[in-house]
Image (cartoon, rainbow, N blue to C red; front, top):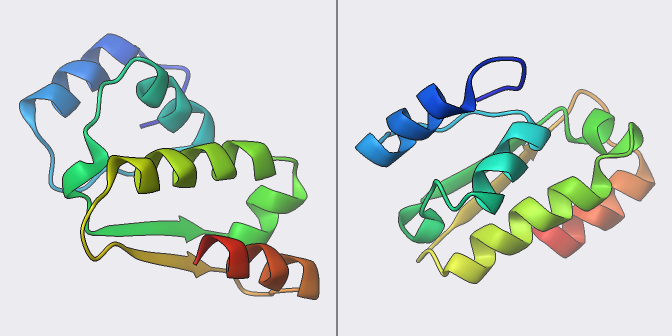
Length: 98
């Protein structure tokens, strides 16, 4: 899921059911606001290039997404963050999310 393309097609696919949902932070937030996805059955949440997302000012977006997922109450959620480099400030944020 990413911006610049029709959100209607993505909404239709999500409501039909998906096994894997990959998206940019902005488009994931769009789907959250439209209530297009039920996170209650989510098993794994992965943030790739976490340091870059947080470094480029997406901290609030990431917090909103993780908060929404946790609020949905999935059982045994595994949250993973990947990055080639993890400076101390990213480690501190990871400790809050994970």
